Image (cartoon, rainbow, N blue to C red; front, top):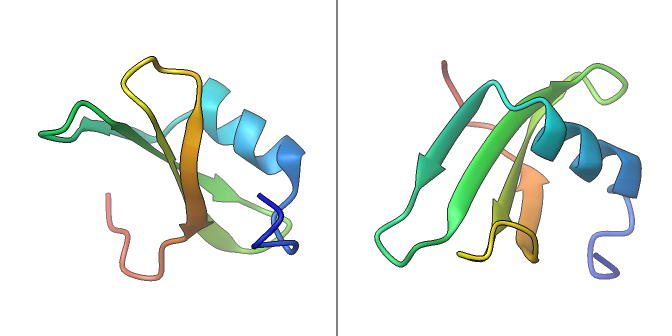
Length: 65
């Protein structure tokens, strides 16, 4: 996650361990969302189909439960 230096690795690990919502994409990638109190935002983490390799992570301004 070097491109998004404002993201903390702990936050990504938190989202993967405590998702509020999970979705499987058509290509097999898995999306996870959780609220990050410190940032006061929802973080979306997308992992590859293996369930472990992080593909992308970003604050999702449009997320709704």
